[in-house]
Image (cartoon, rainbow, N blue to C red):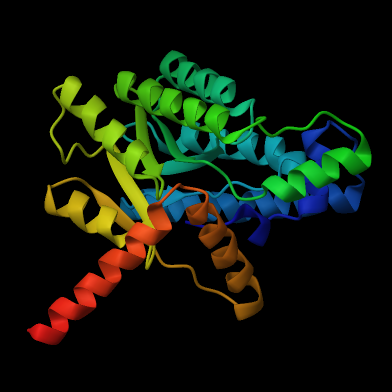
Length: 263
């Protein structure tokens, strides 16, 4: 998985997102960024290893979405190699997901999508207030959860041309996905369905799902400490928003420490 902001200039992506004309220098920068993304996706395709493109802030996400869709059209002919990411705390993302799935069906490629709730809520709302445009974030957590569940349903229903990674630390979302797989008579290790959590967070979910035979990946963030720490703090804040889950994780960790001490 990589963050496109690491290879594409975000100021240029913002202009592309709103259809603003680019200067010659910006046009060159955008093409350089596109080529970097292309090289990553081409290498993943050649190696037969999926690559996940992370989501970014809403004001330059449109340009990145179009770029990733072009990569899926090029490299996802036989199966999903390139995955985009949809942040479902945005109230427009479920509609976006439907449109992308339909486009993949019409054009005969496989849409790869990682489902997450999201990471930049306060930043998004603050910018919307400052610049006086409609808040892109759903009004409450219940609305986000409803869209997340609907996104799971959509992906499972369209696995003929969709592959999904359910990126969540939420037990209910994980169980819902497993339930939908059973209802669709899918094997637990169907290669089109994966679950993902951060290393060190919700490990009980990861281990239990993997033990039951489901496809599970663990994210290992790396990079400069000044950039990784804010990322991990946002993830920890997300976990505390899931009622009772953080306390339950702590209880499980303490119980495991005691078990190992007795062993």
